[in-house]
Image (cartoon, rainbow, N blue to C red):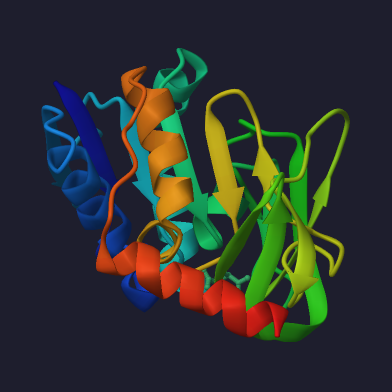
Amino acid sequence: MTTICVLYPDLLGTYGDGGNGLAMLERARRRGLDATLVRAGLNDEVPDADLYLLGGGEDGPQSLAADLLRRSSFASRVRDGAYVVAVCAGLQILGLTFCVEGNEEFEGLGLVDVVTSRGERRSVGELATRVGSQLLVGFENHGGRTTLHGAVEPFGTIVKGRGNDAKNDGYRTKNIWATYAHGPVLAMNPWFCDEVLATVTGQELEPLASVADLLYQERCRVLSS
Ligand code: GLN
């Protein structure tokens, strides 16, 4: 059984990011995989899960979520190998520090060697990045600018929008995928959802014909026209 956990959807759930859990569950079930979706709220312990999904959030809820996560078992679970897909505020929280509006600095979880400062203006609009041979599509709305340190690899290279720094988007470690793309990103990018699902379950997945796949192809066609 594969357990997918959406963490603090009440704090980190802007732009329907909680839909990432539903997209993942649906694509797992349609392959006949045994998967379950749990949601951990503000007052819940972080449950045992194979994959944690962290969404985006406004500055206030983001710092509260970081606080709760710092005092929870989450970081040690991730150090022990649990997988994470983190979007925007989630991406920032996993790093060393992040700044909210007014430049107030907060401590992140220190799981990844990245620092988020405040950009001069918000990055708002369509986001498209190249990840290997694939295109990742979505949209962004954030004031943070993220700098990767040491050997941390970006997740994608910017085709449209700004992501971390107008060159790269997010980061990728052994067990973490992080991006600035909302959408929800796993619903908008079936290939990404399947890449995570295949990695987490260790299964080779048959291709799936779905409306999400058709919409994705149409978005790519429009972006490249
Ligand atoms: N509060 C963060 C920022 O503005 C993240 C925003 C978001 O998750 N969309 O950078």
